[in-house]
Image (cartoon, rainbow, N blue to C red; front, side, top):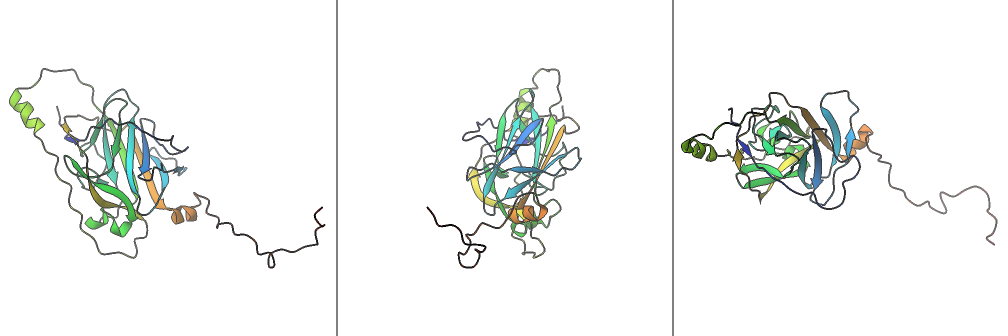
Length: 262
């Protein structure tokens, strides 16, 4: 059996108020972006005729965020998750392929992915920032800036075989999750004005390594392109009329004399 080293199996409950309409995307899994302020980002469809599910979302600079994914299938799935084109487990450039590091979700489980994994029990938080300050930019990679990508690989269904000898089991159990590359600040690039994801504060996040053999092709790929509100305004995806201001009673009012109040 081909072994894919995977980190982080989490079963969590989604608490709080119901997410706003248009805040989830996906058919085989559901993807939602939650901020630490308790907001679920509204998603705006691109309208493109594409086999991938592509949506826009509004990012607020400085907000820490979580990628929440719910498995809608009655079988395990592997999730290759990339932010700004970087695999969130390994930190390497991602092509969303089944040979990459992936998180595993059991049937109907929900997982919360809060940062770049730097060890078996640690992540550094995701937060929205300028692209020049992003984790990807620290490696000189702006090729997929501002995109949260999820590729879904169901597990190959196999006939159960006898357990391997104990020494082999111990070897597999000891497989370690390599640490993600440490991001270094890159010089600011004035040409990079879009949103990106930073390498934030460290946080405790337990995980374990499991064996998993994914199918060859993803059954679903979801792409969330996050942008600042000003960008979404220019694209016409959100209404950005200037704020209402009261009229000046001497300057703006005109016309005829109204009748006196009774």
